[in-house]
Image (tube, rainbow, N blue to C red):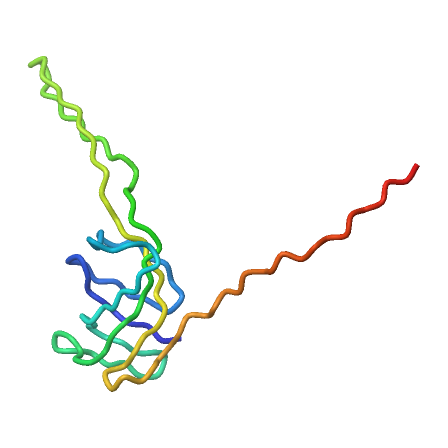
Length: 132
């Protein structure tokens, strides 16, 4: 199973094709849009690994944006004892949910691809006859 280490939003992620991730929000993108990550730090599989210095030129990872949203609220409560001073604040971090589709090597060769999920077609179900 091939994997790649990508860098986005100041963080590094080890990704495999078909995987769904939450990353820092990618601005100005709409759902179902295609994203290319070109900052690939390493890629490989069980047998070989290619490590960049610091990145691998020509390698890329393709993904689809599923949605942009916000995480759960994190409460920040600060209290100074015996001072009658307290402050309550909340924060919701924005994120982008993506699905990794393809991983390409530095020479443009496809290393791995996500499996296509076929939606089941709606078949007409015969109605049961009511018996007396």
